[in-house]
Structure formats: C-alpha cells, structure tokens
Image (cartoon, rainbow, N blue to C red; front, top):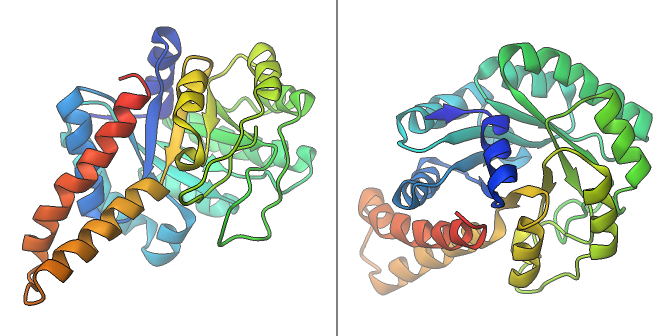
Length: 276
C-alpha cells in the first residue's frame, strides 16, 4: 500500500524501531526491496536519489515505482532523496511522490528554512511529507563540494519551529557512500539533538555506520535510515558473479531472476537490523 513518510514514522517512534529507506535505480532492485519487506511484514521506503532523477524523468520514475508500492501488501513510501532545487522538488510532489527531501544544508540556515517552508506549503495540503536537513552529511566520493558539518542544536530547533518539516536529517559523524569502512558516531551531539527535538530523526550514510551504533540510534529517535551503498554493492557483485560463471548468458530476465533474491537478502538484513 502506498503511504507517506509520516504514516511510517509515528508507529516507528512509538514502538522503538526504524524504517529503512533504500535508494533504488530500477524496477529490479525496487522489487527486491518490496519482496524483502513483504516477507517480513515490514514497512519500507523506496528512495530516488539525484543521480537517478538526472538519468530518468520524474514522471517515468513514478510510473515505474508507484504501481509497485500501491500493489504491495505492506506500507511503502515513495521518497525523493536529496534534491537541492525547489522547482524539481515541487514537480516531484505533483508527479506522485508521497515524500520529498529538499536539501538546503549547504545554505545559511535562514535560506535553508525558507526553502523548506516553501516546499512544506506546497506538499502538506497534498498529503506529501517533507524531510529537511540541518548540518551537512559529507560524501566519501562523488560530491566533493558537500561540506562536513555537525548539526547545530539551536539551528535544528529553528528549522522545526519555523518550517515544520515532518522529519529531520542530522549530521552526527555519518558519511554518504562509504565502502568497506566505518565512521565513529558523535553520540554526545546525538544525545543533545534527541533531547531537544520532537520529530523523528534521519540518518544518511547507513552503510558506513557500525552495526551496534545503528541499533543504538534506532532505539532512540532515529526512525529512518537511508541505505544505498550496501545494496548497490550486492547488486554489482551478484551481476559480476553470474556473468563470469556463464560467459554465454545474455538473457536479461534470466540474469535478474538470479540477482533479485540476492538484493532481497541484503535488504532483509537491514530491515531486521532496524528492528522490524
């Protein structure tokens, strides 16, 4: 069933678990995620990142993923991940996403708040939830212009009071796109944020967070974890393995029927890790 982010976050906050938000890049990995969620009777978020929106038009993405979410037997949210362009975010709302993230984290806090307010004013009447980010979660690769800045508690409070997003992404040492290495979470800063803020929190860059730290964050106010790298790695390794095993194999459907269960297995691990 298709839902928005708020529909997923409030039960998660109440019952002490978190919902995984998986970046997907096509029907096959989206299907793998939904299959894993249905097997566990768990809720899940299908996220579309900036790279995907630059590769495929928004309405084409919605046409591919929205029917999958609607037909699922578990709650599925269709979420636009980091986007820095307000007109594009508003277009995503109108196209059929049920949740959007306007990322103004590289701007001064007043401009960030103003941008989120504009998105909230357009999205909320249409039943679409909004995610904001205060502080800045850096990238291990691919976006060197993104700064690294821990979330300031006072700025986070200002964002919630003035713009009223549904969830807030925070920077507490997490890093996007880490491969085969892990970060140290600043639990002192996280504790301050958790005490001061009254909305579900979001952690980006989950693949680079140690398992005990993920579990500790999930037991707090973090109700959404963004996950991309580990799923892409499983997809790529599975594809490479099957093609190397059978050099004569060329049929796409045969290949994907082998890869989809592998990606589902990876998604299942993360769903279980977050408490569902």
